[in-house]
Length: 220
Image (tube, rainbow, N blue to C red; front, side, top):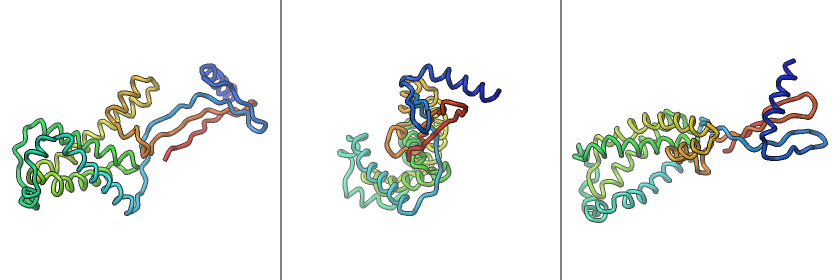
């Protein structure tokens, strides 16, 4: 009875497939339109992997900083300031918009970058904290001293925000409709890149006789 139910469900689903069934001499698998499930897969990382990711993020910050704040970077920045600000730590006087929205939002994308590369949530927080600290003490000092608030608001609040974005984006990406996928990728752009490790391909199979299955593979 259970086999009959499973076979019936599979045959109904196959009516909506965009590809015609392909018959093999050894396995009568029905080929359906590819369907993906988005998730996160935690794994261990080598020291060289950690250094590589930190270096990539660090290099990107040197590119993003002048692009996102060109007036501040080119008008207020100088290597004389860099030398004077090196090692200094102050409470900045930035507007709340920057401290409570921009920095946590930046931290959330750092967190999600590391999540996309297979880091657990606690490891992503740790890596985001290291990346943020490197930015504060070796990049932003080109224009101003390192900020005490930013040292915790960017990685800590950013990771909290990142967990929320992670959950929401996974829900949207797995809805199966184009609007959900577009919005999910928009709020969590790391899922668009080749390094995203959590994409699982799901493919129902049927041998033409009495066996129904679900084949899946992961992109790493």
